[in-house]
Image 1 (cartoon, helix red, strand yellow):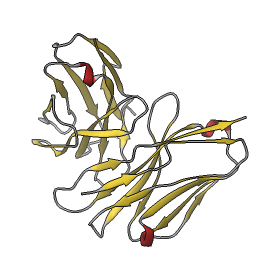
Image 2: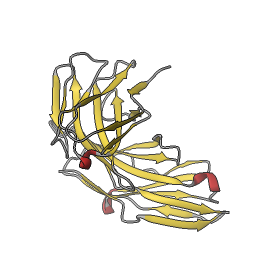
Image 3: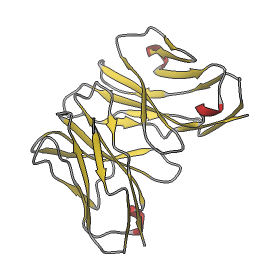
Image 4: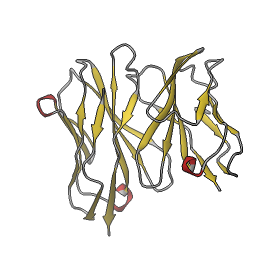
Length: 116
Length: 112
């Protein structure tokens, strides 16, 4: 069974600080995809990034970067020079390839608060 | 682009009442999902469908039913509403499980 753990329930930082959101996953499949979504206070869910299990290259998009390590089953998300607008709940998610396990499983989310 | 449309956006139900949450997508996506998000919590999968005529239970299916008669529509039915079903419900669709999910705006349901 697939599982996603986001151990950090809430994180609070001051603007311009860097912050890393942790995501640890469990899967028996060798082919799977990992995702990060953002849920701002307005409530909608916004897709941020997708990564497949065969691509361990880190990715950077502006102030956002992602570190995928299969050896530790982790897919961590770092925001550099955080801004107040980054305040949101961030969800990590996992989707497997195998047969009936076609579920998209979310972690419990990390509430990030960026203080001015 | 309409994307994923959920109706209604808000609803208050009395205990024991029934209702259907509507979800429609216009992207010809095969995969559709219903999630619930309790206050301060993550998303829990209720039901999902990988194509018309095919549905399957997720993590928390009790008290709900779904159908998928067309590719576009994936309604969620609550038969006997209970206070424990007070939540925000999200519908999502994907072209495959390896692509990003498109979410509706959510339905905030309160059962009193």
